[in-house]
Image (cartoon, rainbow, N blue to C red):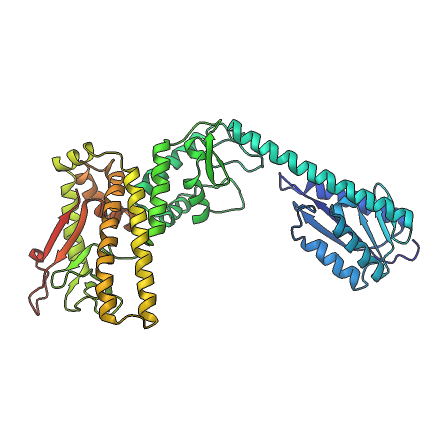
Length: 467
């Protein structure tokens, strides 16, 4: 032992629920004291916090210590207990072999010392490693059984971080946060994007439950998709049954959220950037969809030609006047008796939504296959165009019906509010404006204009209403 010039101290705990590293700190204090008693100088401290040594997860500091042992920078190792180094017998043998090659013969722990050159010492160490591995396996089985029992009883998982909307016991509702969740759900079902909602949360200064974290789209998406807020116990990402805590929203709204996320995933529709009527305008010459386009500082909708668009390329209209006219017409329509009748007579559309999603996915898959065939030269451009047109019609039809189903969610709180919305329209973000328009408007056909005219003739706009 007198030959030891520099020792490595290794500390690890597999679960740090508080995040305060208290377990590691206690190990370090005992190991430093032991090194001092032995008269060993400490070359370095290697700390892996909240990482299991049984499951084979990467341990950066353990790997760094092995490199220092191999490089001859360490003569001995100090740990609180042998199982802090590893609970896996095969990894233990690898550690011993590396120490033997590097000339490191001493492992000192608070409970005992191990001489790598002593047969009896190694026998005891191997038995200890096998016992530790067996205990880890038994502990893992107990934890899994406990989790399964919690699932069956609807109880929450362990862990220190409380879920947003609930107190630290994970059962009691924190009403201030519950109100925020309900508002987020209503706004999402009304068509607002997760990105937009995150921006709102940050702007309002809403704190997360983890002080070091800020709001991001993955965090909010997880909350919205979670069965927890609907009083359901999730397990492996799916609802396993009723939970022991109160629901913040209805299960019906939870199903609507799941359906809307699925629709966004299948349709590939992104949040709008700067155009209110993207995808909702049609060319009065050829019937093709109009696309957004900017020339200088002027936003326009154009009929685009070419293999990716397939239009005639001979129709253009300035965006702002058309958007203002359509928005005014939509808001006026919200106050008509026809809207009340449409909402009152609607039926549960969950099954129809599932069928439409399958139809949309099938048509899009065939369109992708068709494009690949054209790219490989298996079909000509006329053949590609002839086969693509009916598929595009299927996609448009399915998407229109899905929009109509989603639109009823949007309109629940808006019918009869046209006059109020007109006054606050400019304060709504683009996501919300698009959702309101899309819920009422099917498409609007733009007729050809007078050549050379600098003003928009509103008679060119022929709306087709969904509701």
